[in-house]
Length: 279
Ligand SMILES: [Zn+2]
Ligand SMILES: [Zn+2]
Image (tube, rainbow, N blue to C red):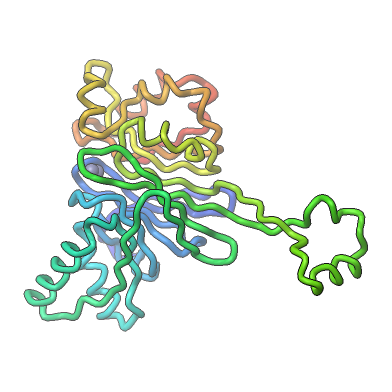
């Protein structure tokens, strides 16, 4: 392994979650099994093989790695990647890459696709990404990966395989789509970002931010700056149905030990055993 941008790794329910996230420093995540990544605050050399990235907003700690990543893919003779980002930012991001191309004299070749809340992107037959609005100091979105399976409709459960086949060949839809919320990523957000998109509380895995933890930090101010405090999680303890809640994006003013100590002491039991602090 090349010593470069750091990242942690954790496996859950057949997914490997890899990433790093500290406020104002950098955030980047990827899930190799889903062939996608979230945010490009930097780009670990090892992440280069992931070809689809979903950016939440344009703060530098979430996107400064974009030109580096795009240039590397080309240098390593990999296919141009696909970058999903909030629609309003596409033209400026293109301009940014053009300027980088002029300065660096290496082609910046990627497909940029603007997204807005409410939209869905088909990743594969099994996976769809839904875009939802989050609440931050600049326009921002979160992403939910839904798993979908086709299940035989209940009214056909008593039929033989042959009868079902005949129905299908006759043009009758015999299955219906079942969706499971697999993984949600909020990026930076105040609690309203979660509250306004209830499926985030149901996702098997939720990757989110807990930028502030100290008791004396004023919460109204934190919310105004589009972030969350430990107490926001405690208040919503009963709402989180997730199997795993990954909390990152801690402020640089906290040391790792302080984060562990304060969060462990204050989180209620039912939440503590499902929360993974990303430090
Ligand atoms: Zn951030
Ligand atoms: Zn931000």
